[in-house]
Structures are given as structure tokens and as C-alpha cells.
Image (tube, rainbow, N blue to C red; front, side, top):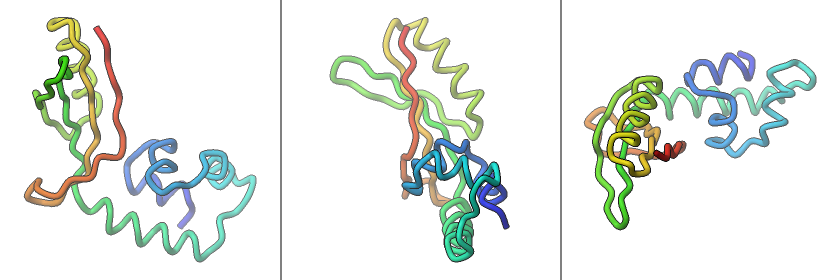
Length: 121
């Protein structure tokens, strides 16, 4: 498998993948464009890590961020749906809304947040 195929298997953007696995973004870009080749052992390790890390579902959670308050308003498996909901909510409430991408186990108990976006009103 190539680096791009492995990332696509995870189903996330290049910048998020690089951040999640602590790989310099330029390195990911070079591997995916074919400018340089990732060592075979790195590809093997990444493939194994992605299989383990992303067998869990991706869940996008939308949080309202008030002065010292934070609460979950919406949960979906679609980034597009989460962004649209957050935009509408930020405009409606005149508060900052944050979207966090979590990778969760099957019962939604053990989650790791590795990406977030903030939407201001």
C-alpha cells in the first residue's frame, strides 16, 4: 500500500493524518506525490496503526463554548453535517461553537480527540 492509500483508508484529510501520527506535513505531501518514497517499514507500521486506530468510528461532536461553560449539542458521523449545524448554532446563539473529531470505541466510552475547528458568530 502507498502512503496515500493508507491515509484514504483512515478517511481523513492529509493535514489531520500528519498531525495525528506526528509526521511532518511536507513529508506526507512528498510521499503522496511520489517525490520521495516512504520506507517500507514505515508504511507497514502506518498500515497497522490505521487498521487499529480507525476500526473505531469517527464521530464529530459540536460543542457550544460559553464563558466558562461547555456542552455537547450535536453528534454525527459527517463532518459536513457537523460544520453546517455549528454555523447555524453560532449565528443563532452568538457564541463560539467548536467541532471536535473523536475516534471512539464501539460503546462511545473511550474517545480520543485529534482534530477540532472553531466557528465564531
